[in-house]
Length: 393
View 1 (cartoon, helix red, strand yellow):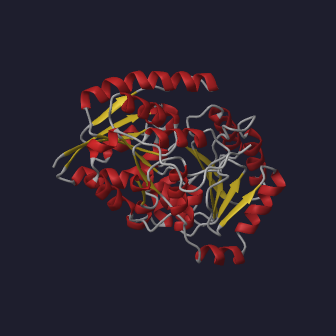
View 2 (tube, one colour; view 1 turned 120 degrees about the horizontal axis):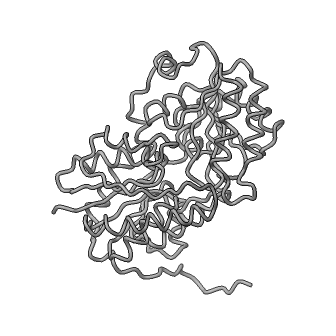
């Protein structure tokens, strides 16, 4: 039986993990697939990553522009409203039987609200995670309560979603989609990567991805400043800085990195979007990954690269032994990088693994989509945990 499925993507951050699932759905004769792209995909400063979807051969890519030229919390909220107006028309036209979102972005929250109001069941991927340092934490749980079907990365996350009142029969552990690409992709050699990015082949190499801490006063500016000052302690190392998310406070952090790169042009490059192949190859060939990106906790351990996680954005996520947490101070970042480069830690990293699954999540999600009783998903009932009620004070 043919199923009309619409997958939402709001930036390169969710499209990277979603891409293997999208490709499997695209080739399935029992699925009529459409993709709704919005958010950072259509922002020039983010690299206009909508081109990646076109290059991947997607047939139906609906586009909704929504991001206002503002770097404030109010601007973000207004962008959300603009996006919702556009999503209404798209979902009315496509009329999908299931709407698929991944993660915790405000763009996805708006899309889910529209879907639910139009009676379209939502499948939420990668719920149940904790990231105390970003407002994404609250947004993720809100999407969970809007969704009727759930695919989680770990058993811990599955239990947390059940704790939120979702029925266990609708919550399934599948693993992290991002690891599917790590398992199957043929990475670039170091020589080819350096040639493409214009990097010296024999120098040590750091990757830096740092986003605003949207749940923290100042949004993590101090962390960005501490990182660039810490990098001065490694003057012979090449550094590739990837673009920050479209978040309030993100442009200020981007400006900090841009000024640093202009002063260190011989060894530091800022690239807004690398694409999956180049980004994963960069992770694999880097001596260390620095910053506060989820990919440094999920994908970097899978390619056996040490991580220095700076600040509290990712507080609450499980860590592999290869991840070193540090405070957003210059000395703390320098010490953490030096620890990551030691022979002892590199041996530890070589033997560690990502705690987010086996890289076969896409097939499990597709099976879930094809077997789900879509008609029953429109009705949700709260699942109370068994046991005696306890009143907390």
